[in-house]
Length: 376
Image (cartoon, rainbow, N blue to C red):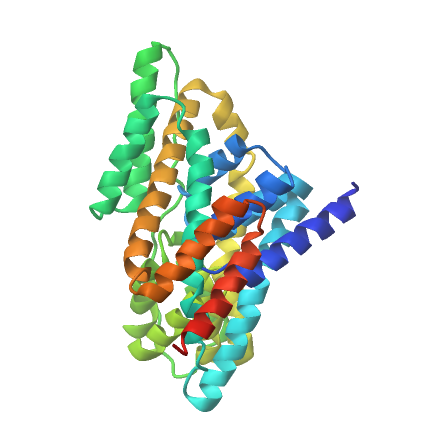
């Protein structure tokens, strides 16, 4: 297949995924694994795991960065950018339309019945990915013990980045000592938290909107809830946005497909109209493209180094453990009545019983079933 055909394939796969990728990063990664590892064989499961582990250690939206890695594997640097843009595009367009609706009418359209059935459905998709990735990551009982420790501390509320790094370092030191190798390892932490002094304006310039979201994109770790804290500090405390408007913006990011960072499009529109939406979107996603561009060539080199390979193995099992923790917490929040339990059980049957069902149909089926059950 020539390069142009590969780019078209990358664009098609990730645009479709961007249209149906509900449920947060764990669900996105589960759908991605099904598409690029299991069905299309763009890479083996070990390399996919390595990319997950490495991606968890850099700022930015993990699932979007994984999309970029997958695009790079299939079609090089051009594939990286095409994959990222196509995955983000549906969420950005939907969010932009909702921002216009919100600005014009002061409220959001009612979509809750359709969203109700999606979260229970994606629980089964996440569980399937955890099972497949876990089998590959679990190389021995010591790796399993590290994964169990990370799972426990994650459930106790320890920050996921702290848990990942600790698991990686613990594993690297343990296996290094066990193998009695003499080697040298270097680590670089090139990311710095910075803050500038700005003056609140009633109508912000496009450049100021871009710079504000570029800062957030460059230092953001964690989930959409962490994003809320960053934006609260950057926008609400400066008087650019009310907290209620911010809550509405985060809600939009949660119930649209794709990355929750599409929230930036919604807020940018509120702050400076159409071009503000464009500036905020580019600002918050641009650092991820650059981080992945720098990181991608380093992952195979890490695997070739003995001690960094130990570190990567330990980070991989830690990443699977954190996915399991996310699944547990999501289950507690989602499985609240017989309707959600029914949708989950049906989804589990489709995923594990029939096995060849595309996750897209699981998501769409869950959405329709959620809507129908809302009338009962």
